[in-house]
Structures are given as C-alpha cells and as structure tokens.
Amino acid sequence: MSIRNTLIITILAIFLFNCDDKKSGKKINFSITTNAKNNAVAVGQPISFSINNPKGLDITSVEYHWNGNNTDAQVSTTDAKLGLQVVTATVNYEDGVDTVEGKFTIVNDSKPEIYTYKLLNEYPHDITSYTQGLEFYNGVLYESTGQYKESKLRKVDYKTAEVKNNVNLDPQFFGEGLTILDGKLYQLTWQENIGFIYDAETLEKTGSFKYGKSKEGWGLCNDSQTIYKSDGTENIWTLNSETLIEETRIQAYTNQGKIGSLNELEWIDGKIYANIYQRNGVAIINPVNGAVEAVVDFTPLKQLVTPHDGLDVLNGIAYNPETKTIFVTGKRWDKIFEVELVKK
Image 1 (tube, rainbow, N blue to C red):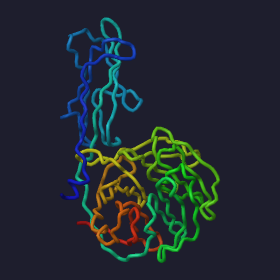
Image 2: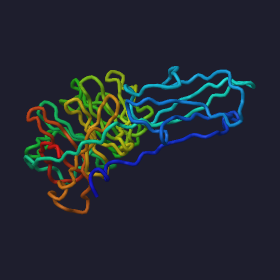
Image 3: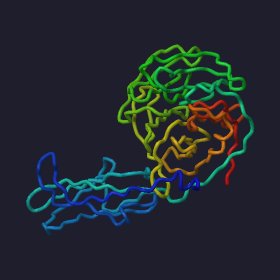
Image 4: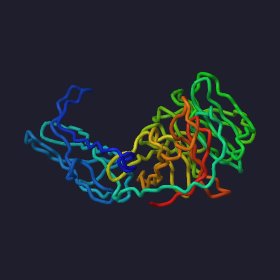
C-alpha cells in the first residue's frame, strides 16, 4: 500500500436534514444546504448557504453565523482554517423563529508532497523506553516515556544513550509528549487530564496544568511563543504559554480529508511535524490553517532495530538546531536515527 493510501484518511462529509430540537422538543422546519458537493470545499473556493424549506413557510429573514460572527450567504474560504465547520442560521418566518445548524468541511487545495529520507547516523537508544516525547534543548536530548508504572522524564546524551538525569512519574500517570520553552519543560499525561511543569535544567517539578476541550494528552511542541498540543485526533490545540489555557485549534486535513491519530509533535522551520500513531509516518502541517503539506514514510527504519516482543511503532521526532538534522526513534527501539528529509 502506498504512503498516500496509508496516511490519507477518507473525508467524512456531513449533510444535515430537518430534525427535532431535542432540548426543547420543538419541531425544526428548516435545514441548511450548501452549493458544495458532499458539503466539502477546497480552501480558497467560495461556499454558499441556503435554507431548505420543505413546508413552503413564509420566511421573512435569514441571518447566518460562522465562527461566532455574522456572515453572508456566500463566503470566501481563502483565509479559513481547514476541517469540519459549523454554520448556524436564524430563520424568521410567519410563526416564529428557528435556529438551525449545518456542517461543511474545508479541505486542502492540493495533495500532500511525499518525502523520504537519507539516513545519516545511528545511535543507541534505551530499548525499554516507550518513547512519547523527544526534544533537543541546549544540546541535550530530552525524552518522555509512557506506560503506567514505567513512565519517566530524562535527559540523555544522544550519542551514547547515557542518562544524565531521570525522573520517574508516579505509577498512576501515563507519560506523554514534552516541549521546552523559556527554561520550562512541559510534560503531558495521557488520560489523567494533567500536565506537569519542570525546571528544564534540574528536572525539578515546579507546577502543573489542566486540559480543556482536548481531554487527552499526546504530543507537544512550541514555536518560541505558542505551545501546540495534540490529543490523538486530527486536532492540534494552541495553548497560551503563560496561562497554558487552550485558546484555538487547527484540524489536520489533506485534499481528501482528515489525518487523525496525531501523536508526538515537533516544530521545524515554521511547520508542525506530527507522528501519526500506528502509521510509522509523519505529517508536515501548516500551523496556521491545518493543511497537511507533506508526509514522510519512515517505515523502513523499523527493520533496522532489534526485534523483540515489546517492539512497537515509530514515535519520537526531534530537530537538533546544532546539526540542523532530524532525529527519530520508536517505542522500545534500541536505536535512534539521524536523518535528512528528501523530496520524492
């Protein structure tokens, strides 16, 4: 199966028909339709809304709302974020007012490019580490690992796999991704709805933070100002770096549909690189609108590590600013690989 077939997930286009308002028990008389095939439109293309009025009621006015703002019946998607969108309409008619909701999807306007890699070096890696997060900071490799009763945070000499510092998480926590910003290290837990804050030099825990709508913790990265968080879906949430409150989100979409199961994240040259869980691949994502601009197939790397019963999928990507190269590994892999990306 090609990487495109493996990594690109078929779009779910949603069309809403007349329905009952279950909260109020009121019969809804209208629905929203669009001019787009299967209610999906490529970014940059206009989309038009109209009201389906099967009973032929006398409509006196319609007001549309998209992204919390009033909008016209036809809108441009040029600067829009990709993904599933919600539009509502307030319909005034002869007997009252109905508010109806419709959904449509904005996809990317081009196929993702396909990248492979050039293998530069191999280094040893702790075969027991269930890698969840990987990041370089001041020349040192930081790693967060998962599994209950096994999760840890550590500083590692990537050339020798020597552990410089290690912190074990309490057994009730399943460690996930990490990122470092302004001397603070942020580490996620999986389903415990809590992240931890450490001093990046000493690994002394200094605080914690709760999640918002994202529910689960998977991966983290930052652009020196904003923190980005994945939750195992197509969503990547932006966190205020001072309050750690989720403020907005992007949805990772190709021209075909969403890319789900986004896991470990890394910020490289203005893009978000996201491991795709169980796929041994990485999506390169535009952080502004969520467009998946390229995908990288790292599947052959798994053949270069020692096979054993606990061997799992690729997960862990880190950019080393000193070498200007990318390092990748996997869950319980005994090697970490230094690579250079090559466009196919």
